[in-house]
Amino acid sequence: MRILVTGGSGFLGSHLSEKLVGFGHDVICLDNFYTGHRNNIEHLVSKSNFELVRHDVTFPYYVEVDRIYNLACPASPIHYQANPVQTTKTSVHGAINMLGLAKRTGARILQASTSEVYGDPEIHPQTEDYWGRVNPIGIRSCYDEGKRCAETLFFDYHRQYAVDIRVARIFNTYGPRMHPKDGRVVSNFIVQALKGEDITVYGDGSQTRSFCFVDDLIEGLLAFMDVDKGFPGPINIGNPTEFTMLELAESVLKLTNSASRLVFKELPQDDPKQRKPDISLAKEKLSWEPKVQLNEGLLKTIQYFSKLDLK
Ligand code: NAD
Ligand code: UDP
Ligand code: UDP
Image (cartoon, rainbow, N blue to C red; front, side):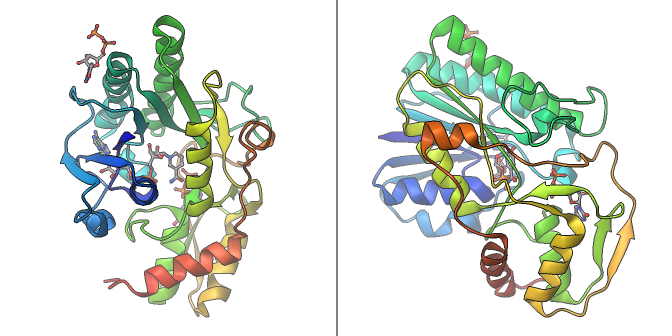
């Protein structure tokens, strides 16, 4: 199959592209390199079934493909908040262009949505029928509302034009190829521990997240793309094992044998207090659940960061 992966040189996109190339598909990796890096897909560039395209999804793109994975969008708060107008444009105009492309070509299209559509949730764990609690005018809104609007567009193209859509709500995912300066908690803690710098815990560290190792996440996305027509989602893809940020910091310190100290910094505005996916639907519809435990995934991620030049 001919498969377009937008955001293909980013953290998740590069792992997905690698898998799809390995399966023998013709992969077009589209990216504007805002947070993605050529290093992530360097090993694929010489393959005859891989093509790298520098393009911004907010502009139309014409190509003939069978499937589209729409991952283009910065995912880390520091990056999506650096240019919030561009973040909303990427989610909204990007979705319109990729849906227009899917409509014209008849391609099946998967949207990388997010647990952020639930905002700071009152329902715990989060099920897909929960509508969320999102601030429409805060500093996270460009990402949260952009992704919510993208979901709306996906479902309207599905209802209005019968586009074959898949909306995956991805929960916090970590692993090799996260950018060391990406600003997300797992990469921050590991890099700080390896460099012997202070571990920056925001707030009192009692807020929770549920971390999914990248290999598990990619298996979930592939399974969702492959299920029969008629199941558009939305579906939660993530690991339901929940940790506080303090517990995460302790695990990272232990696994890196680091003497770094914890320092407490101000909690960012609208930072969700708790997050954990209910993955019953993914188990039922995709026969999928994550296999990699946090310590095992952290070790693989630590090994990756240990080999980098972390200046
Ligand atoms: P990432 O920042 O590493 O990758 C995003 C990629 O999109 C980068 O390569 C970036 O250069 C590219 N991009 C950004 N704006 C673009 C534009 N306008 N045109 C073309 N390319 C553009 O982030 P990631 O963790 O790989 O996330 C991938 C997708 O998954 C994102 O849509 C994100 O919202 C979603 N997601 C990720 C997580 C997670 O924990 N990693 C959780 C929920 C949702
Ligand atoms: N589009 C695209 N590639 C395509 C087909 C469409 O980028 O192969 C863009 C097109 O520029 C348009 C958007 O997708 O702005 C939405 O397309 P749609 O057909 O839904 O809308 P229309 O063209 O009727 O406004
Ligand atoms: N966080 C932290 N220290 C850091 C980076 C993040 O304590 O150096 C916290 C952050 O406040 C949030 C959690 O870790 O409560 C997850 O943050 P991340 O940016 O990774 O993802 P998101 O908030 O989008 O889930």
